[in-house]
Length: 334
Image: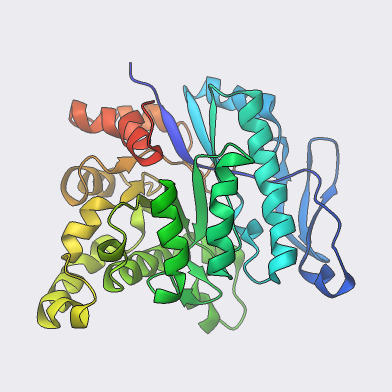
């Protein structure tokens, strides 16, 4: 049986550095522990999410992996820790806290984990400078970024320094939904509604922005993956293709057709729908879909190896999802 790799799994520290100054305290994360193995992540004085030892404890995490036949996880920060809304110096403290945790977990079990770090993308030049450190200082394989940066779309040319550095360093980029732009229209956004309904919308918007902005034209060596199966991108592709044709490549920004670009992106299996996953892996982006669960959160895909192997997908598609696409995304055979 082929190796099974979960590329979409998150971590969060048990202990955070103290807020560096009083101005940032209302937006600073900390853990309020109910016991040695569970607690509530607080943002300032506001409860954000209940967490347990699966978020930081290697042995506890491996128990679940062994039970569900997951051979390896690719660890990335809880998206809320990306900290784009903080000043650069403050955000760097939290990025390093997440990067240190992930590095320590990979070091403790190098056959079971790989890591994706975080950088302060609210300052693209600083983020570009930080990317080499993810490899040299932390031993991480790539980087996780949000689907928008304080409301700014990823296809904007202001993020070119980051994309250029990611291509130059050969570092894969995992785009995860974060603070969906559509939530700004809600009077009082509900965290569950946002996660269930709006995360895929924002992921699709991020992918569309990259397509329309010509990012792959400028940086063809990039390896970009999207959480939640690319979200709504599949439903937008026909429209994007027509728009590209009628506007002569989005007013000359992109020579690559949207369908061609979509076939070069990577996607996870975190869609909870067997028929849509088959469409994604067989028709929309053959060879570009890897397993991803959103472990260890409430909406995670349970027993992912058994589920994927029960779908009756062609053998080469199943093998690609289980491990081969993850290896291509990370740039190493797994």
